[in-house]
Structures are given as structure tokens and as C-alpha cells.
Image 1: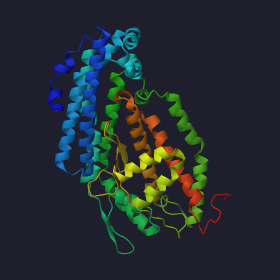
Image 2: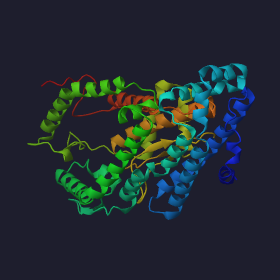
Image 3: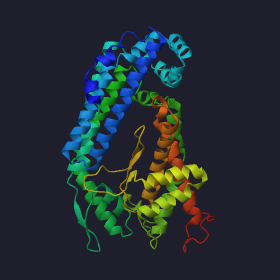
Image 4: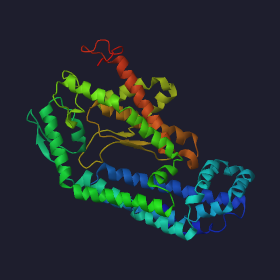
Length: 420
């Protein structure tokens, strides 16, 4: 029913030009549009996740493209809303909020819209800009489909005679092999295949850059950086300070790389050596069940209620753990308001994937608790805030591992001091 409702633009256009009539009408418009946005979000998330299960499959990809087309139509049809709200002015908008208590949940959202005065176009221009979204992610989608479904990943024979197809999950796994010859073979095979398509991949990157420039120009931002940060309301000085802090601490990274080289007994440290165990005799592997146990134990400081909800996410199989051919590479957590979050993983047993389970579970719990305690209009959060919950869980895991890992090579692991 929802797609049919969406195709009938009258349910939204009836509000056009009337947002400033009275508080009751303003509330009706926001409630109607936000309810449709919620339904559309569910539709897109479902179609997207089905497509990510196997990026080679045509039907789920058709579903995803149809859902995104509906999103463009919805955004285009409701594009009058932001210019009209801005035209009303802060005093009138907040007057409506004061008059009608049911508008109170919308207050943070409305305050955020009012920030966009310098970057909002006329109603007609906003509609064109919304329709242009249909093309904005074309390059990103082409890259994703090509690298996950169509790139002819090579097969290599390892030193023990095992033949493996070096797709993204296998690359992540075998680049950490203790056998250096195997690592070199895996790196060369994987990146040589990418090198063959550098012009195609470069073109998709160029297309994405043009999409950023288009948004920067039409929205009258001074730079693509300002454009990218404005939605999260993050000052450019914060971003630049983070970059400066990284540069200032590069000497620590260089010291670590020198230590790695020395401990691995290498004359020259290569890119292919960055993921292998430093101690040759130690090659830790984990199962999904072991990763769950470690994440649960490490998150104990967050309290009983948190652990109960986190365990529920594993027990009810909110996580798709194992890699399969055609499955989208990497990992993510995505939420469906009114349902629960879902996680995609490509777990092959490395410690960094245990850390990824902790990381994505931080996102999932953030989403779950936000959805549980917030109305739809304020349930979402910006990426700058999102990474706090995820990296906190990673740090809990690292702290737990350092305190509980027993080693014959480093018997006093907690108190070791590195001397150069």
C-alpha cells in the first residue's frame, strides 16, 4: 500500500503553501510526512539488505533500485517543506511549538532545519535538486556492484597446497598469514586484479567527486569539506584538528613499525607484513561464538541491562556472520525503526574481526536504545556521534584482552615497557 500512497503526491501537496496557517495544520503536515518517511526507510533498508546478501542477484537489486527511486520521488514531492519552514521564520515556527505541545518532539529537528537558511534554495530549485539525487549515488553503486559481484577475483595456491579464491573476505583473512610467501602471493594477486581495472575504478571515484562538487555548488558551500560536515553540525576546525593530531603522532607509528620489523626479523617491512602476527609462534583464531563471548565479557562495565539487550541481539540472530560469494564486503550495522538493528559481518576468525563485532555491536546497541527511547523524528544520530558508541566497545575489548591474555612470550603483558 505504501508505494501506491507515495505515487499519489496529493497527500503531501495538500500541505504545500499552508504550513504557516496554524499550529494544528503544521503538526498534521509533519506527522503525515514523517510517517511516510518512516515507512520508506523500512522499505529501503529491507531492499538494501537483501541486495547485500548477494550483490550478484538481479531481483534484490531491482528491489533496491525501485525503493531508491521511490525515495527520490518522495524527496522531490516534499521538497517544498524546508523552504516553507524557513520562510515562516524561527519566531513563528517556535511559536507553533509553544502553542501545540505535540510539536515538542519536532523541536530539535526544526532547529536543525533552521540552520540551513544559507544553503536552502527556492521551492522550484529544491525540487530539481531533489530529483538530481537519482544520479548522485550512481558511481558509488557501480563501484559496489563491480567489486562485490563482477570483479574476477584470482585463485592462488598457498604453501600448504590449499587453493583459495582471493575475494575481499579471503584477502582480509590470508593477508594475516604467518607465512610471508603466502602473504606476498595474496597481496600481489589481489591488488594486481584491482590494477587491471584502475581506469574503471578511477572513473567511479571521479563520478563521486563530481557529485560532491555539484552539491557544494548548488548549496553555496565554500568547500566540499564544509558541505560534508554541515549536516552533522561539526566545525571544520574540529576536523582539521583531528588531522593535525594524527600528523603530530606519526613518530609513534614509525616507532611501532620499526618494532614490528625487528620482531618479525625482516630486513624490509612491506605492506604485506602489516597484518601478520608479530610473534611467529602465535596465530590466534576465533569462532563467531568465541567472539560473542569475548564481546559480552568485555562490555561488562556497561551494566546488566546493556548486556541483556546485547545478548538478545546475538540470540535472536540479528547478525549475519559468515562470508559468502557475492555478499557485500566489510561490515556494518543498520537500524529499522520499530523493528531492531541488523548487522552484516564477514567473519573469518581474525582478531580484528572480533573487534569489528564489538564495534558494530556498539552501533547496534546505540540504535536499539535510541529507537527504544526516542520518537522517530529524533531517533537517528549523526556519524560523528555514532562512532563514540562503537569505538568505546572496541576499547573495552582491547582492555579486556590485555588483562586476560596469557602469553609465554610476554609473561607480564600488562606491565611491559617498550625500550628503543
